Image 1 (cartoon, chains in turn green, blue):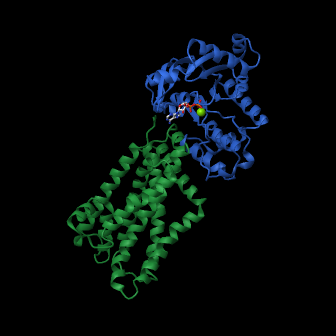
Image 2 (tube, helix red, strand yellow):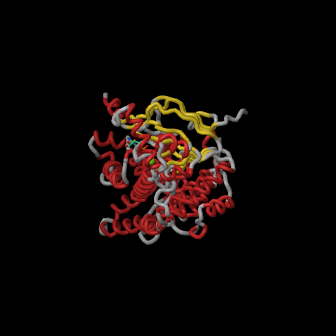
Image 3 (spheres, each protein chain N blue to C red):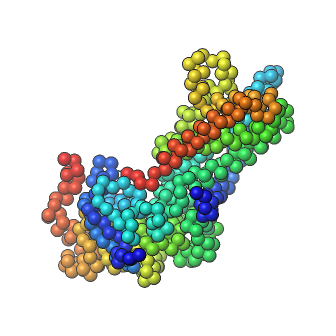
Length: 248
Length: 253
Ligand SMILES: Nc1ncnc2c1ncn2[C@@H]1O[C@H](COP(=O)(O)OP(=O)(O)O)[C@@H](O)[C@H]1O
Ligand SMILES: [Mg+2]
């Protein structure tokens, strides 16, 4: 049930998270600029092998929002858990879904902004070729939200911000290795391919690879989108069960 | 609806945290419209007891009734405000941003924020980053976030720790005014002097209530004028009926 008050609490939470980001200009700058700089770096690393950059470039557009939102969310949420603010929030009328919704909205819109900057650099100066730009935006948001949801979830298992940062390599790097960025998935050993089949980042990479050649969304991309949405809902559901009101 | 004349009723409350028995069959009743002090040394279970009343502590057995309802039910979240021991506000927001957020959660307006800031004497710091304030100022931001929701029951965990005497006096006056206006306050402290400011005092030691009386009553019971001395006398007396370490020993067995 969505009431006016519920909407007010959700939007207030999103506003609060964005205000916190607003006081941390350096982080915002890093979030917005670093992916574009990395992309430029990739372009020049692959000078002389333009075909390879054409392939990897779009995939990177999908991977950045996921990694960065995972990192930002898990650290912010660990802070919320350890500082006592979460405990306090759970004694107010704020519902768990409203808290998660607020986070998702704040970081989802940040991810969109980041994606716009990165994509603009990619399509402009780096003259990357992509068929449908809006498809990139859709997948960037979904996969940023997935990063946010997994960050919320993993924050339950970290006691300190330092531990939360350690989850980045543990959760993200294996997906990075297996998602098809370094080696196309059909060419992997069977076992690795099976593992990659259950990792959400693989579907992000698939979709971004196809976005290069396909006009709009084809059947396989709809499937990727559905799988990602399923993972997102699952991760959000699990994350909300880690927000317990009564604790030992 | 029949309004009960007590704000909190606790019966046979047992809480185990980790492997430690923290609250041991605690029972008490706290009247409405008063300031009750929860006093005892560090580690005696004050925070745990307050968490039980706020409905966020897993309890082993016993009942906690708050404003006529079981502690922790959703409807109490508007009627009870819990101010944690560590100031639970966002250090990376300004004072007024913090309060506006909590106001939105409690369905309050901007004018409630202004009033709360004035009540804790922080109007001048309204646009300062909360993390840049002194510890005592942060505690007051945290308190203001509770004040603006105008709850029936305030649960304040060591709100006056680390404040200078003038501020402490002002806050205790504020607590008295709130009680006079019909609010109920449970205020914890490990500084025995603060007991004198309360209408009633619960003395907690190793998870058990060793006294439940007015400050004058405590002096009479113990035959000591100084409340610090009164606590020592009462703690010793409680120790005679049960050895000081019996709480932990029983848990271990
Ligand atoms: N999360 C926890 N897990 C295990 N034991 C805890 C936890 N929190 C507090 N305790 C123990 O419970 C006892 C009471 O703690 P607390 O209620 O915080 O006391 P006080 O607020 O009076 O200082 C202490 O012995 C403390 O070590
Ligand atoms: Mg305490």
